[in-house]
Image (cartoon, rainbow, N blue to C red; front, side, top):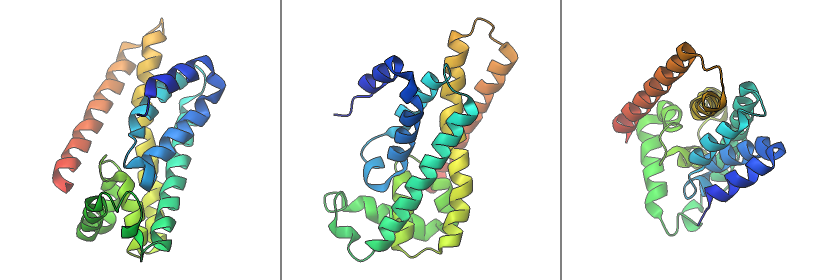
Length: 199
């Protein structure tokens, strides 16, 4: 079983590795074969909270963005290179519905689905590998990924970062805290809406 507590405790004792933790959690959450099994987004939110005491929010977002982007590109090329045998590799041999659901979703919604799917947990790690296996145009894929990965990084790092900062700060700015809370609530309402609409 994947133990988040041990990772968080270790990173608290070794804050110099927090940046690498953000890169790892972002990559895990987005990568096709790992992100299906390990919920890296929870780990990313927790590590973003830890980061609030040692690195800037800009660095946190940038690390999550670049890592997620590279993970999606790797998944795309993996899907492209294995397009004729994707069904024969794990986890798709054991869980064929993962691939079937990803392909059905992508065929139905196309580029919009690829963008929105970045924010839908169960389908997020499936879409880049599916897009590659279905020969999606690389320029269009990059265009969607550049924007969706950036927004994804904002959504999944900023709340944890500022929540942790507010907890340890002696001078809590109520207006800023309220605006962040409203922003988080709006983002999660939008994510739930798209979850219901596109799944």
